[in-house]
Length: 471
Image (cartoon, rainbow, N blue to C red; front, side):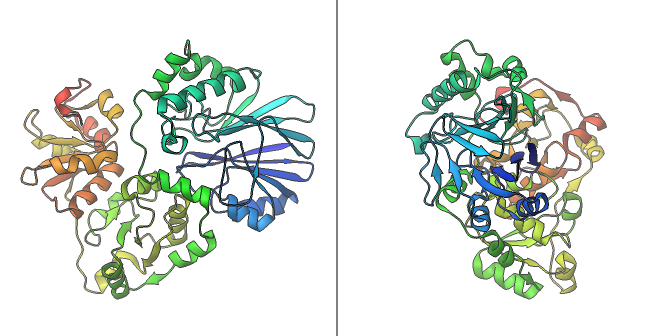
């Protein structure tokens, strides 16, 4: 038996590849399936099943394309009702794979079809659980995402999750290995560990959710502090449930190279959003007007989903040479299939064609320090509220990037302000959104809070209520 975790950092997502005696199972595959096909061929094994722990909200799974390519059936847990052929398993049902077995543990709560797959080894011993979004390391799945589909409140779903954990997971032996669906950085939980594998025994000791005294306390703990889910989550659920375009076709269409004149015509004729995926250090000094910068070398796909929201939005790309296919693929992972093409030759070709570029007013942390006056200088901190509460520039306002559509209307365009995040990635996203909507009277701070702190700008951990998003 071989168990391989295939972890994708930009999505904080774990897929799993298990083989035994010439047969394989893949759990929660990513949308691009070619790497799995190559593994199967290399190991000379037959894919027997494709297991899905639930209808994912944060990415589009590859179950349909993988099933079409291999003939392997798709397996969901109880309550699943997709618009395609699959096996809807029963609670407790056994699926054999070579010399090992998988037992279906129906664990509703995150969603009502959520299922944990228990791997039983060659000796009949419980070996590992593939817990999807039911149990994370340090956390459990948020119970607010499936409220509409389940016609329940988040408290009712949290109650189901408690029962699932207490009745199906906690009774398992301490040495059972936990392979979760996500790790730190995913929006599917709020307190996930940076580790990606652990023992159940350690989780019983350290996971806050598993250490609540009763159901009422559990429900209160797991529903506290939940932020609104990213706008694209609902669309991804529907794609996973109803079907989607073949990944090869999506990539082929997105790989259309456009010269500057064609790029401009496409932008004007389709209402496409211009997405520039270069790093902020290259982007800020020269970019096509009204571009939005979300760097590929960061939490790219989640921020695209959070900031753009509508997966049907036409997109035109500006990327570093050689990153075209990678970018289209990463967008497709979260359901953004409507990429029209990319600018051939990038911004250099745009300028050579005599076309104008724009700039963001970026300043150094030292320059910011020289003008900063506590109580007078207006500073917007676009980090998460938890980051802000831990430490922030004195008298800065908490304005999380994820909530920009809420707070942007309160910005006074006549009053100069400064904007920063932790290191410059999120603040450049915010800066480009601000400029695309006509706000230009601001300075973005290079290096973010880290650089500001190192420069000696006064900071504090005191949170003034008037500085939060709620006021």
